[in-house]
Length: 291
Image 1 (cartoon, rainbow, N blue to C red):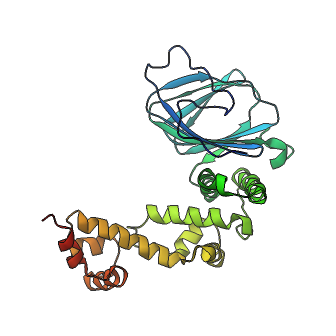
Image 2: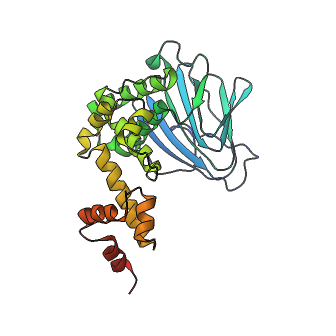
Image 3: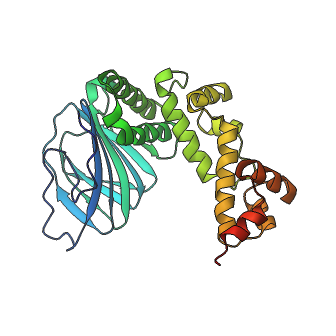
């Protein structure tokens, strides 16, 4: 059991990085972040330019889940080439995997875990779909939490985190996650925060909208936030005020900021800003002006 190292110049197993092909562009730098959670391995990766690599033969019972955020990833698998473009995921067994190729500016993640832990026939046939489904969002949120907190977890916590990882992987494959499972609450709260951050300027952003997007009830979402000390609505309000404060520093007017970050009007924005920061937006902007 180990935490994630600093970004490195390889991608693949923690134990043995693959050898790059001779025609990989000179100067290629692949950055990875790897975390082992007992018998599972989580890897985030990104590369600025094209990379080709071979890989060591994997055990027949190893399941691989690939998520490509941007760019594309081509897997050489059992004599065929499987292309996975940005915005897609794929799950399959690692048997027969002999290498991969990425396009420039590719970023994504992989999760390797025992197929038998997910299901007796898990990965027998490749499963693919959109990388922005609620199930994938929850899985990636959980993986991100593990990258950040693995060294702080007790042995019991690591076991629970590993089991949640298995359950969330099942959710991606079978399109269902039991959002009421207490062990999944941190991942649900993280996924909701990430989604809210993307939609802060959306006029219809509410806790109910986030719950619908994540396929859970508003009660389940509120319960997931209970341990954070901040409600879903309070999180949205705080993040909008934080972004509004940055916009004021950049020189935008009070009316521009109020409209962009979805305050009802300038008066509402001024009241909300003063409650949080003990000064009006205009006072804050003046104090930030260079002398």
